[in-house]
Image (cartoon, rainbow, N blue to C red; front, side, top):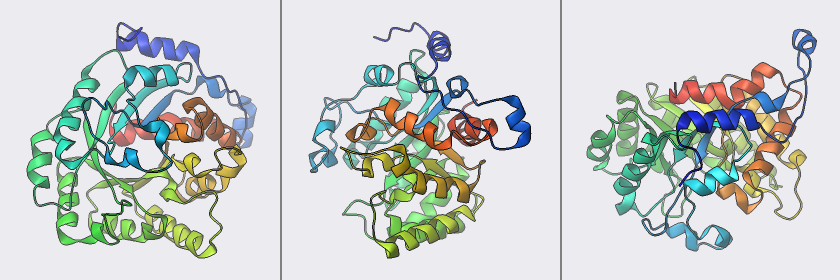
Length: 328
């Protein structure tokens, strides 16, 4: 049971508590005149919250090597504890790649959580299989729920080959999302981002968001792979219906010896390429805990952007997400 009796109490407590890290920076003479940016006052909208209850759901990927610490249940109370004092005002659930036969059950579970007033979750991106002819029936049954904001399919799984997102059935179903007012999260291999750009161009009425800065490891030493990733980022950013989540890449850092500076090049490239109106923070909790707790990841990003303007930081951490997901 949450310690908060209502969403109002939760938000009030979050606002009062603020965050522990206070970094400062300015970007223009006008903003410099305003003084330093007090990052503790910036509300956070977390656009990538994972939850799973292993008594209810089966997540096949939890048996993979390297994720042993995630092979347990992570429920809302755990998230509230992990984000305490981090000023999280709103959050959006992100699907967790459950076994495909459990997708409807997962959707119903999280949409019910969004209705509760004891947590900050006010929207959900659910799992789905746009490559399937059954997708239309699945999504149309759920589309009337106002808490439903979009769909994601993890495209980098071994059983999801290169080019799958450009197949005619897939494209047709992504166009359907746009017709229903829903969004699509692109989570794909870093050298396949150009396919994502082609998909977004073929579906101009659908809004897209690129997850995890395009999934290029911050430890990557392959110049060819980085060049392909950069080209993909530029092509995606050239499309007005695509945004970018500044998230996820902390899990690609050296888990025993990392710093905010290690993450900065990839994040800054994305932020500069997409621009201040089309980037948003995402926690990727609890996956981020493979390297750092929520507060450590959020603090690292705040360190990277401390020299940017107050306007930029408000958009990154809160305003862009609220607008994109229509969170009110």
